[in-house]
Length: 558
Image (cartoon, rainbow, N blue to C red):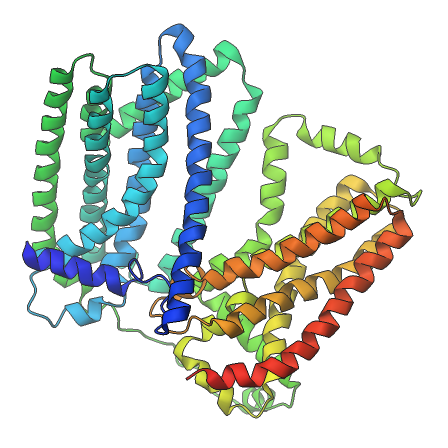
């Protein structure tokens, strides 16, 4: 066991759990840790608050009928199923596709030691999710139901044991699949498919939460009771420990609860032994040769050579290179490109799920006087500009442009192109993808607003400058604190504090222009001049600043 814990500690330090910044310089390392910690705490508080509010709402519906115990069954069963779903994704990624696999295989380590350590690392990720998913409802239930102190002790034990059975089940399933079939052996294909599945699940959860607004009273209570019973039966049939966990939390006496906890411990221990036994038999046979790759051969023709050697603008060539990397790398595609395409989904799902939402929005839009050129038209224009700032700022393309280069950033120093032009190519790449997302929402806004033709042209005129300055602002943070020492693409974008900083300037700019339009009570023409000229003025200032700081900052990077 000592080797397992030592290997676990090494993996956690190597994959970024203990070193969030990935930078060797102390100041940058400290800043990265602080920024990532603040970001994770904000997200955790926000998500935990939403779950607690939902649990409080459901408890208020169930308590009058004496069905408050269903709250425990509902959240425990849902958590177990979600742990299994994400466990499959984590297991494939950590057990087979992590960069440390090739270093561990030649070492004199048994499969049980490697899988035991990787299982603990995977469990750490799952415990973060489980804590946010199940702890707030348990606290809400304990406070509202006036449970004794023993309930919170039992809750802590259940929290520690709950994710292990579904996680071990996912590990056994994945190891058998990887040994017998090539379904998940392609890393890029797996990353793309798993990311899309995760996003579909997230949108489905959001759609389900929005749909609750169309139910009231007894109808919602019956729906929760039916859904809880079905969910609990599925979870209990696949993961028997779920029944013990729910029984321990809802038992009337401490003795009965402890008996259920003991049964849960015994079942968990048996599942762990089974998992390590399966690992001994199939893990090495499924992971050896996984890093090998093949490629199709293509004949090089004269036309191919002529097209590839045709002279083009250096910025166009660099933009095309960045776009290809963004699209062909699954992690970059999911976190940078797809973010621009899902905003219409997030906008339409709440409207569709509330029944008459589309009709209400259309009726409200028709009541707006856009052709008059008054304050209403000015506010709508400012709102569209603010939305463009937000969409472009949140895609993280320019604020992680240098970090995505990683250790190959030295290639920028060999190109016969100025640093300023190379950086502008990255800025324009982020602006181009931001324009795609903005235009998708723009088309939806046109469908609802039905403005006159000149107002549509005015909207199109103010968007380019707004999008460009929002993309330009992000490149400065990555110039100051590039995150180059990474061995996993996720660290360049998902664990990069520069992406968070890159969101702040566009959000502040959006708030500034919206506040000036509303606070100064501007009509359409002054608002149009403000939203048109201010972004381009900032672009001009940003360009001059970029020319001064690009060379010294890039030359400092070793």
